[in-house]
Length: 250
View 1 (tube, rainbow, N blue to C red):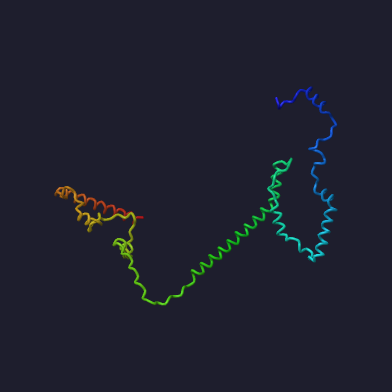
View 2: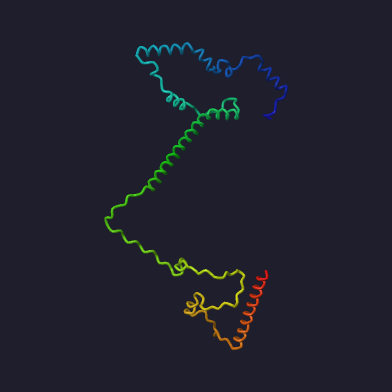
């Protein structure tokens, strides 16, 4: 199986065949390794100094003032931002270390973006509040009355309200009662209706409210109703007198 180790005898034979104390292969030789930047600067210091001196001498001969050929810091920052590449994980770097490195690099940019956004939001809020105050002041400012060039048009008549609405809106003043009435007071006699209820005439005019049989009351029924009425009146009066007597005793 490919994932299993070979036999010990096979491994020893392979090791003896390859040999020991051999020179490193070309892929991992010292000559092919990358040189650190600081070491590269030290090695190239003489060449860099020579190029700088030649450039300085040429500027003096041409009469260019000192520092004029330098680009502004803003432009350098823009070029630096353009030259920035997408962050990539380095060889041998763990995912957690890569995430921390990216967060550290982006922290300044995120802070600047957040500050810019907050400043713009504050400015927009102030502008909106100022415009609102101007609109309110303009609306509250009294307008000059225009000169009447023609007679004003007649005002439209308000819609007529129904009678029941007018009666409801009408203030009714009642006279004050001379004698106070309690909530549970007992009357002396049953009520007597002298007026038909609301809508009775209309129902009667439409032909309703009439039973099939005529409202005919016989003499015996009328006599019995009168007797019951007298009994009820007598009972009410006795109850009223007993309550009054009990109230005086207290």
